Length: 261
Image 1 (cartoon, rainbow, N blue to C red):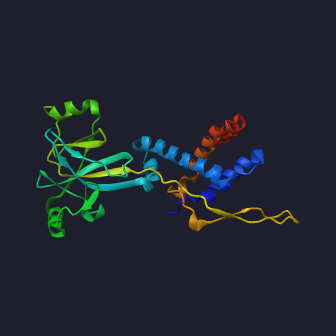
Image 2 (cartoon, one colour; image 1 turned 90 degrees about the vertical axis):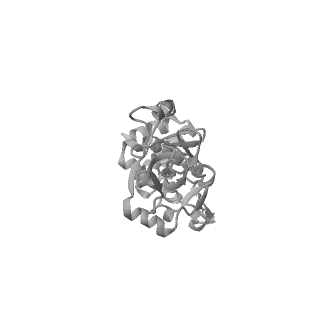
Image 3 (cartoon, one colour; image 1 turned 180 degrees about the vertical axis):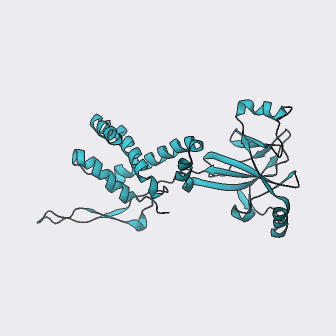
């Protein structure tokens, strides 16, 4: 899907700002900094609300990744699963079970390869993995448990973790998964937005006619936002809010609020 370009967003934002102040919004020194801050804020807002709306999940799709992770055994009731290096926020988790008490990676994720010590490794041969899949594989969602309830959940007489009801928690920068015999889990997570880059060349003006003096957008050396074009209005509104905070201009705030209404 088409992505939001810095130039397109700048033109829309400049039209709003210049309507009020008639000034020039420098693309590199002011606008792109404000826009990247706004992008992070929008990402933070929506990753907190992702479970409330399918629309928000769709908007966050460019930032959603999946990894098969090989767990590490511990001396307790759980196994440990270190997050990927680019992990930013949790989305969901599942296990694929065969033979009732054995887990395998998802073939749809990195062609069945697994993350171990933050390197992709082969879990099984293609032939063995295919046999497990075609014979008896079943998918089971893993329930996220908060830290305060984790110890109680592990020892609960009737609801303790099993391959039918696996559980996971996040603590000390890693994940703990139960039952401890879960060897592989499929982690869905969000990565952070990468900063967009606004590159341009200055076109010299004509001193006699007063024309020119504009900028020429350099698409080859720029970097688009990762957001799909469908969320441009939401990103633009966040850019406005961040800019208002930078300028602390009450007039801009009133105009922006009236536009939202």
